[in-house]
Figure 1 (cartoon, rainbow, N blue to C red):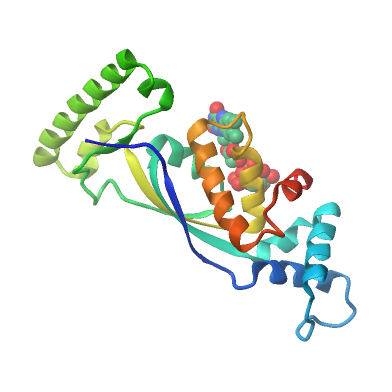
Figure 2 (figure 1 turned 60 degrees about the horizontal axis):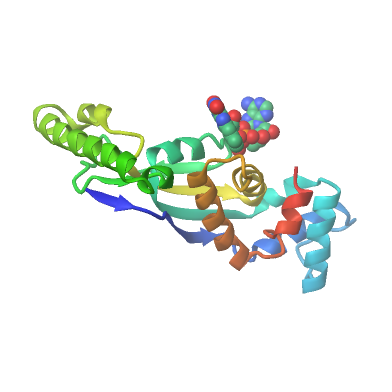
Length: 208
Ligand SMILES: Cc1cc2nc3c(=O)[nH]c(=O)nc-3n(C[C@H](O)[C@H](O)[C@H](O)COP(=O)(O)OP(=O)(O)OC[C@H]3O[C@@H](n4cnc5c(N)ncnc54)[C@H](O)[C@@H]3O)c2cc1C
């Protein structure tokens, strides 16, 4: 059994010059000519991104996409993540990948108390044994039916910056569950590094 306490997020790829692309799209909406020869200065990019948000011209944010490798989240969390319909996802298969090390996520509310932790770990141990026995007798696609929500999963997720802002708005909020909130924080930190003029707290307030 392997307890995983924090998810990991790596930004695998993103649209080159995402801020410039978004700002250029915004520029096109106000320009008589085309933007193929337009070169925007840093301050123009910042101004155009702010203008798009202020005018709620959110579609310009669809021109920049970001792809993340996410590891160390529970199946409970991934179920919440995949509800976001404008993401594209590819998740590790429980039909084809046998759960060997039995990695799982323990909610902090359970791990901080020795009694609840003992119940949790004992139950995981029982499930692990049952899964191991079943997976020798039936296809693993059927043995997986007894795996818990705590089971760790890995997923590749791609979304454009409009959908990401929507996701951050919902999932950074205190009403979101702790695990997906942690995940959203890590994803936000990744995109903030490469596109701070799009992904910053002030802009999120302007996004609805
Ligand atoms: C705190 C919290 C609690 C939740 N609790 C539950 C729960 O108890 N049960 C449950 O089932 N879900 C629950 N959810 C999930 C929630 O209902 C959404 O499915 C999820 O947050 C994805 O949000 P979304 O639909 O806005 O986003 P996306 O799927 O990312 O869509 C983005 C936006 O596109 C538009 N859109 C997309 N598809 C359509 C459509 N078909 N028609 C019209 N507009 C569309 C909407 O404006 C939407 O906001 C919860 C979410 C949160 C944040």
